[in-house]
Amino acid sequence: MKMIYYITKQDSSPYDSLATPLRLLDIQVIIDTRLEDKLLYCDSLIFTSKNSVLSLEAQINHTKWAKIPTYCLGNASKRELERLQIKPYYVSKSPYGDEFAFELVGILKNKNPLFIRAKKVASNLYETLRDNGINIVESVLYETSFVILEDKVKLDKNSVIFFSSPSGVEAFLFNYNWHSSYIALCIGKTTYEFAQSRLHNANIIISPSISIEESLKYAKNDLC
Image (cartoon, rainbow, N blue to C red; front, top):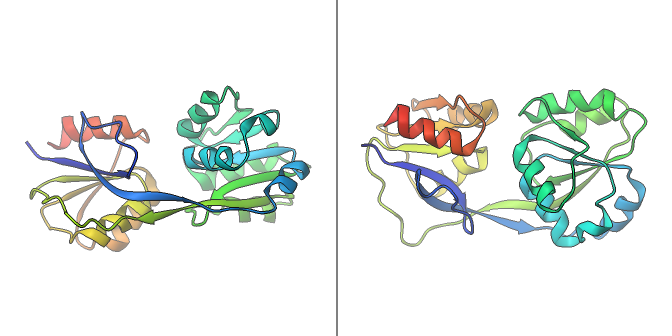
């Protein structure tokens, strides 16, 4: 049976029963000295990832922003808000940031949303809302960094390497050379297209699900 490896954060390994984690990512907090003022100004919050919720909570306790209506992309950010006992006001119909942005154009008309984001993002959500007349403000609260392994795990040939984000692809290539026998399994078209740009002539497959757990089950049941 083929080995399955997935790229994850140093403190996160919830899918060990389905795949072998490669802890190649770390989250670094970025302090926004104007964050409190932005929260006072805004009347809605936009989250596009679990880490965006975590990064805001790390700097300002959720009790101070829990009553602000929240608009979130995907189940991960939704679950993180619910963990804080915050019911999302709106959850995206699409799993993709660019499509989520167009969902919000009509919904956030005459609103002053605060977009909680990473230093580097894959979508053009901010630009789309701004260009459509939404008075959007952003707060960059975290960035993803790559971990350089000192003792690298030797990867089996013919393995499935699972990527849930473009940063996972970059982190992998910081640590390993791509072998022609590997299969790259990607969540979403953004990660898939990024993998195509970096893994030349590789066997790259887009997952039929946007769920990490379901994607790993697909790898185990259909690719191994």
